[in-house]
Length: 239
Image 1 (cartoon, rainbow, N blue to C red):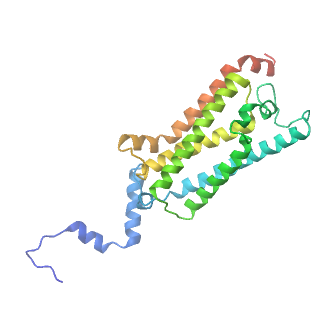
Image 2: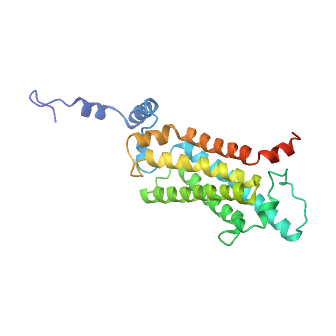
Image 3: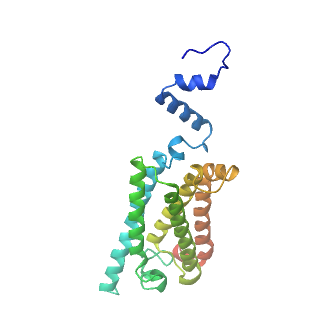
C-alpha cells in the first residue's frame, strides 16, 4: 500500500526493509568489530564464534593426549613398579610420584580415566559448536558448571602437588593449562551470549580480559613452581 503524505516516516524500518539478510549480517559483524564484547545474533540464539569452537576442539585433543599418556603410564607401573618412566624428568617434574597416590584416584577410578571421558565430551561440544549448533541456555549453564568444577579440581590438585606431594606431574600440568584456557573462554562466551546472570561491566571484563586472566593464572602456577621448589631447582641446575 502506498504511504500517504500524512503518515510518519520510519527511517529505521525503511532501512531494514531495504537491507538483505547478507547485508544485515555484514552490518552486524562490523558492529561486533567496533565492540568486541557485543554478541552476534548467532551467539544470542545459543551459538558460539567459530574461533571459540576450534579452541575447544584443539584443547580437548591436547587434554585427551595428556590423559591417555597418564593412563598408559599407570598401566606400565602396574605391570612393573620399578619401570623407568619417560615422564620422570627431574626431582621437581615427574609423574611416577603421583601414580600410586590417593590424590590420583580421589574419586575411585584413576583421574586420568576421568580426564579421558571429560576431554572426550569437550571434543564433542567443540565439534557441535563448530557445526553451527545453537543449544539452549540450560546447556550453556551446564557447560559453565562443568568447567568451574574442572577449575576447582585443578586448584585442589595444584595445592596437593605443591604442599603435600612435593613435585609436579608433567601431564597434569598440560591438563591444568587446558582447563584454565577452556574455563575462562567458556565463562566469557556464556556471559557474552546472555546465558549467565551477569551484565554490563562484568560481561565486558570477562570477554575482553579473558586471556589476561588465563595469563595471570598460568603465571601464578609458574611463580609457585619457582618459589616452592627453589631448593630443588638449585640442585637440578647445580647452583
